[in-house]
Length: 56
Image 1 (tube, rainbow, N blue to C red):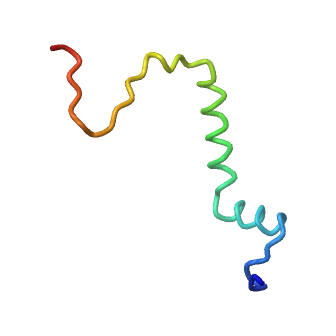
Image 2 (image 1 turned 90 degrees about the vertical axis):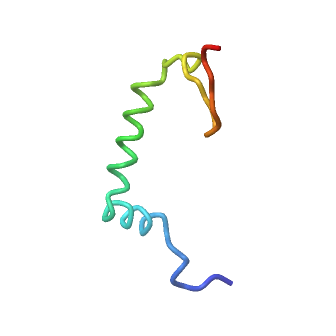
């Protein structure tokens, strides 16, 4: 059984998020996603940290 201090209601979680500014961060993320929803990801090069040679 979980300890009583770990049993939080959704309202308690929302209050905690509002106090630490997480809601503002989430809203900024949502704005960024809406702004970039039609972005063409085919123009992006995804790579790890290894060397990448574009032009031989």
